[in-house]
Image (cartoon, rainbow, N blue to C red; front, side):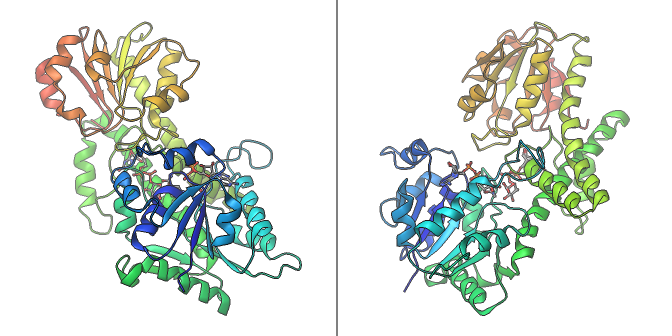
Length: 455
Ligand code: NAD
Ligand code: UGA
């Protein structure tokens, strides 16, 4: 009999992942639960105004919602009806007490484990979907299998590698799926059950050769290692970008040729305003904390350098603007094009744009922010700051601006009418392309002063 699935946590991970699991396993019932009633109401909204924006997500939800995918706040029934429990709750950086500013805050995670224990009415497979410090499964196991419970819980680690903006594609065609499980018989049986979920009904989903299995600790650590190495690549190319600016080298040319070495590869070598998003910083900090906890201080310092470089990159953006705009930004108008941490998402968690906006605000800049998907989040992120307006239309944002500061690589931006933008702005007009996504030579011909990262 096919096992039913519940996922605790209906966020950026729980929602899209379960929608695709439901799509590829039409013979299984998949239920997503959350304590956040507004979020669940949005997932259930009749006109599909879903709580997150992700290309292709609405189509999948339209196909499966009400068929074999259900969103609810009724955790009790959901846990009782299912055999496999994914836990995809948030694990933010802890902001208090021991490990503040570095360790993972595991309170939502532990609350989920205790809920499962309280509500369970049979044996269950528990799947760690959230990103967690290595050895969290041991704590989960201790809570779930403590005492004289008649039921047996097997804890697996199944970290998620999808990136926002490409979540549906990443889920449908993943490079790999990772399942870590205990090495005993029950553990291996549970791993085999989860492999069936990812293989999909009739083996129509992930090819079995791409479903990689390991022990639990390797799986937990792999997720942190993968994110740390991706973040490190971004910091590495950004560290080279500063040197390019000082020497006349061009960071895109350097990246193109470095990346042509098949040992290095050409992905994740795009210099920019630094990495944002909910996970890179949190996961690298978590790795730093783990290294320190195990007495590996030099390793901790090494990984901490990735974060320091990222913050430095954002400070450099403001320093360069300051210098290029005659060492005073007070009362000048800057049109910020893009606020999301990357294109194709409305997510603004840890977006470089927010940090840069605050630095500009300290300089008394009048900021006009535009973004096709992230304006609501921008308003919340910058609440309480003066001299900021939020506008839908980039041309309105550019009116009388002294500079356009492009922060997010939205596809629409290169296609804007830049000669119209030039005519709307105060002169001398500047563009700072922090993503190197505009035709900078054409902008110079129009009369703009152009700044770019790594050039
Ligand atoms: P999120 O904040 O968008 O969603 C988490 C959800 O869990 C929230 O809606 C919250 O209300 C809910 N929740 C918290 N405690 C709960 C409880 N006790 N019972 C029921 N629901 C509860 O977070 P996210 O971006 O989906 O990330 C979740 C995890 O997945 C994190 O560990 C993150 O590192 C990991 N992850 C995220 C991504 C990503 O692209 N966002 C990618 C890979 C891994
Ligand atoms: C990242 C990872 O790519 C996913 O594999 C992982 O599952 C996820 O984190 C997670 O654990 O949450 P995500 O943060 O959604 O995904 O987006 P990325 O595409 O990785 O971009 C992260 C940041 O790095 C963005 O701000 C992006 O603009 C920046 N970046 C990326 C660069 O500046 N240059 C690059 O070459 C690549």
